Amino acid sequence: MEQVIFYIFAIIIVVMAIASVTSRKILRAVIYLLMSLLGIAALYFMMQYNFLGAVQMAVYAGGIIILFIFAVLLVHQIEGKLEEPSTGRKIGMAALSLFGLGITLVTIYSHKFTVVEASKDFDVKDIGRGLLGTGEGGFILPFEVISIILLAAMIGSIIIAKGQKKEVKK
Amino acid sequence: MIENVSIYELLTLTTILFFIGLYGFLTRKNLITMLMAIELLLNTSVINFVVINKYLYPDVLQGVYFSIFIIAVAAAETALAISIIINLYRLRTSVDITETETMKY
Image 1 (cartoon, rainbow over the protein chains, first blue to last red):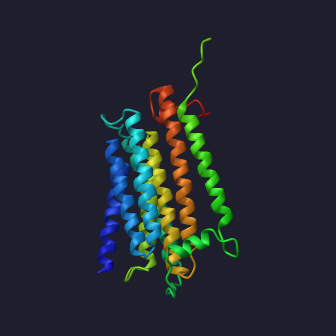
Image 2: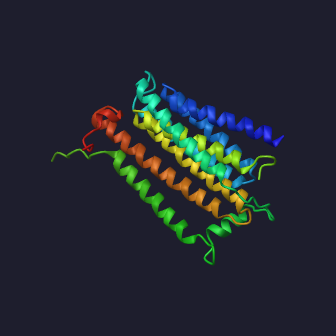
């Protein structure tokens, strides 16, 4: 049963990702990307990482996709189709991607993974304790660094998007 | 782990997704769609962290922490890139990479 659900989600994710990178209507490409990201969130839920699935849906589906839609609307690209890349370029890049895919798959399948059965369950409390832990295996320093990065990105994007200040006449 | 689904199937899925994103990044000419392809690439790396954590080291949560950090960095990167794109559009009235070649050489 779970296998069938996994394959359905995998097909949805891959088809939507292909549609997202090949669609010539930009707003549709954004929506296809949203579907793909939601399918990935479903994979996290299937792996019992509920918190991560919720983060994926909130940050990607709720935040980043909205940002993309706003950007598309702000640069007036809703109507009109994107320029089609030349056929030679498409074939060349597809061949390059397939070549890389083949090499990576051969490497993965020639490696023997030792899969371990889970012996305990985690909930959100453990994630919070680990992220804010100061002892061994605690992630308090990267957590604080990430908060500084987010603050810097926020201030930086406000300043960049604001543009040049007009000269005030006296 | 997901019942009856091996780690190989999950890693195959993420690899396929990664190279779809790479194909999109290499063929697109519009800055916003290139940024979308980069999001796809980052997200596949997040799934890889989660899958390897779940299948090979299920008793620790390190992969989950790294995934959260990658998601935070991706959000910051997208916000910055989109503000740059909007500013660029204001200056050039275009978001096509063939027209933004001041810093090319």
